[in-house]
Length: 172
Image (cartoon, rainbow, N blue to C red):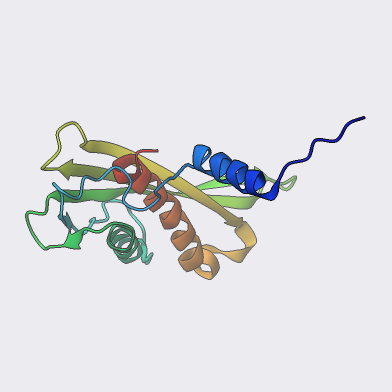
């Protein structure tokens, strides 16, 4: 069997050719935004229109939404008339019993948070979004909501923010 010998210079050339031909790139931050056209963003507080008791969902949601867009885009936050405007409301904060045990009591409870979002890009046509998003998390019923509420709400809000961001500027 005859061995093929490749000279070192040829190996270097082949490696350069291979890597230049196989290069790819992607951008996770700022997604589909045209920064030549859009420079500012206005994010309104999302009022809570659902019965939530003492939940901090409104404050947690508002802050997380602002943080995501400011940290992952090059947009500058303004109080009014941003090139991109986001507004909406928290429309649902619902508990549902799950996994009923033999004694007819639920061993798990699901918390579902629903948010209606209106995203308007004043500079680019056909990029507006008017949509409702829902996400949920579960906890053991014997723990009680007071013991898990803050952490569970943060986890659900993170899911919601991911969905909203992806539907608006990430274009996944």
